[in-house]
Image (tube, rainbow, N blue to C red; front, side, top):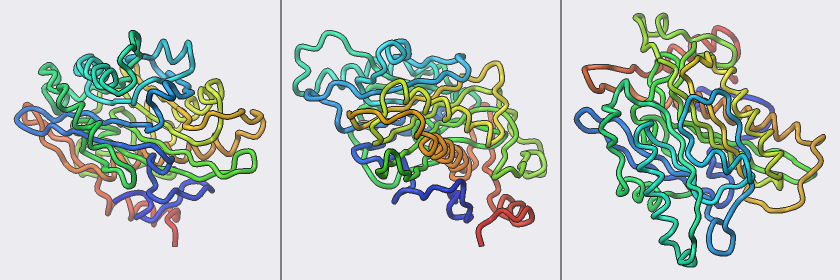
Length: 338
């Protein structure tokens, strides 16, 4: 179940209609999942529809919590404060094939016939605990499927796409999403987050620890701390510098769910805006910052709560969070909604 089905409210801001990154108008999400033999992997695409021949880039900001990762396209985002392509998430050793396929996909767009430089944006986490990561199983066909099937509305979560083989906080991790509606400069704005969770620590829900060894009655999966990718979208008219500030808050939200921020964890947040307008004064951005942290916190929790127990390569297993035990602990702590 999702966080809102527990039911649990995180923060003061209302959720969007689908409680997903797709609540930001013009943002779509698609997945391609590989679950066969020794493979538990895939690719997830976040697609801003506005990108195209009449608008080649969107303002974007990046925050690197810990740089042990392979975020392709990071230096140009840092330099120019913009993204030029959809944002794709995948497995560590497949990231380079995915980037090449993404370049081919965008170059095929009408109006791109004369393009000679392009910055693909591809993030990753290492799903090698459950999947044969060396097989580099994600192909151009999978990338095309994720992009071509991307849609608005509710987003599939848990063991899907780039989250098929991930583990987090001692449990099965995956893809999660959430959104908030907040007032910025006197107008309603939506901020949505999508995460690929694959990091270590002790799961914490609304301040209540949920250690895997106690929750499962046995030792949980000891996550090696292999990263987290966070994508934040908004329709607030914030500029690239301000989006960098938003992205930093997204990384901060990992601490709320118990992240250990270990040596080997590549923790990244990318934030982009669908709106190109005059930016507001920084002094009024606190609600946007708060809504971002709430949305990312909930997306991270959804990525675990929506995942299912998964068997992988070499007989390994990552067990799902027992949601009935989570609910009971939250009831005992008095934090569940009436």
